[in-house]
Picture 1 (cartoon, helix red, strand yellow):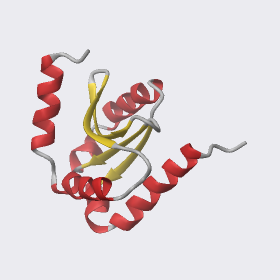
Picture 2 (cartoon, rainbow, N blue to C red):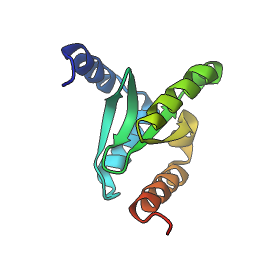
Picture 3 (cartoon, rainbow, N blue to C red):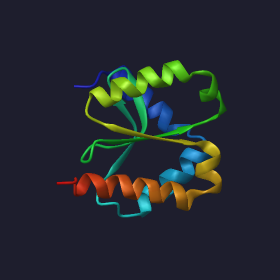
Picture 4 (cartoon, rainbow, N blue to C red):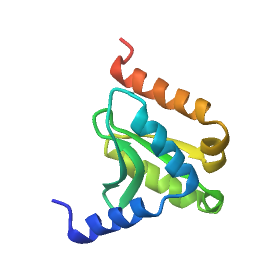
Length: 118
């Protein structure tokens, strides 16, 4: 069961998305990837920007501040992977300027999870 603090924090994060996150959410909601994405999904002490629980896939959209917090992001990704999720990271400018490429990578990741290699 999620604490009321966790629920409120996720709600707050969802109410103030960056332009890149808002744009990707528009496409994730519209496209049928065969899974449902959740925004600001809590995983342990972290909040995933977008998560597909069915296929254990997390998508992160990183702004410029992430260039200065590489160790934190690495530890965060390791924790999330330890929970069974794969993590895809994109820079904000990719989501704003190259959305087709971002969506293609997401699609490929989901397809790979639907039919793992023999």
